[in-house]
Length: 205
Length: 322
Image 1: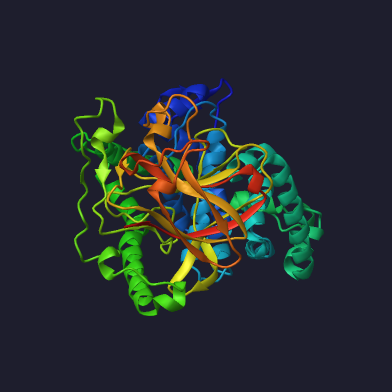
Image 2: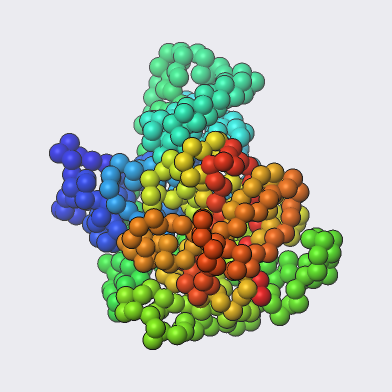
């Protein structure tokens, strides 16, 4: 993520001007890639978690996302240049697709896994943990085209333009999909007593 | 980390999500160290440098293991493809309604040696900066480009081909393609579950594209006579190849103006799966008559022009034909 002065913290004593980051990534500058990793690790983990939960496998999948990104650049499949702000959307898109692929790979694995137990830091309240688990299960019941817009908007707090860029759709389509996802998600929440009671008590939105 | 279970102070779903992702302070740095070690290792090999020592070789091992599904997918894909070929050979008429090529033209089994690509010819006529001086050349024995059954974005790694399926639309900037993963196809069978799905709203400019670039900058597929694929619509798609001469210089091609003009042919997509074969001689750039030059390929493209949008198409079993 950009620092207030417009540079990127690389974690190695090096600072990369935001505008130069794509070019440095393209040149396989390791400090730039490290900065990209550190600045977007949270986002990538967040997108992946929607697909696979919050378990320990998240770490390996996160590595895979960045490895895929680097491989795309190394193989000349993606050329990075211009605005550094597009990098976040690019990584979110890769994470989303890898998350989908991983879910498909685990086809038989039920959504109701033990992730709530492996993430006790979520909340001391077991109801909160169960709510998160069930909400993720509801999210996965959304049509595929609506899942990413909803997650990126409501859990990752991305802007409409960022979501549109990540999903290769127009801003209008992104808005429409978020709206439709909201409607469907609300309807599913109404049918789930745990999530419904949690969300509607104290009105946490 | 723990909060009071006071209902009035319950965090939102987004906050629960944030907390579930909370991690020890040094986890990010440790992850970055692993990634950079992997990058050092891979980038050194990529550049053709002598093996460079990694910062922490021990950190590479678990990550290599973690990503092994990627490489493991390759023999799996070959095995699935070989199985599919076997089944199709027996039940070819049931599956496609047409005869299936003899096994010699199909995908080798994982145990069989892969044909080794050899240098393209003739090099002496090519300029020193021509990307086709180092072209990979198809051997002619492994015509499959991708049947998508490995459910990943990589093409089948045969005959020196090595690339990713990506998609881009006319609302995106140049060179911002997204990786395209296969989806479970309509009318899936146990041996043919996946295909790529192209769907979208109305497009106002040039449309939408699904494409793959083969790993080498220039690919010589002249041993084949064209490409084949299955398509499901309804609609229309322009299918064909992109030559390196349509790829901008900065992306490894030779094009400086009016780039990305692929050699394509219009194909009608019916409401049931149909198989199509297109010869090189039937592929043309828009408004031109010169056929595609299979010695100078960059990749394969499926293009939906704006006049054919909105669109909802499926593509499967992309291959070369002899």
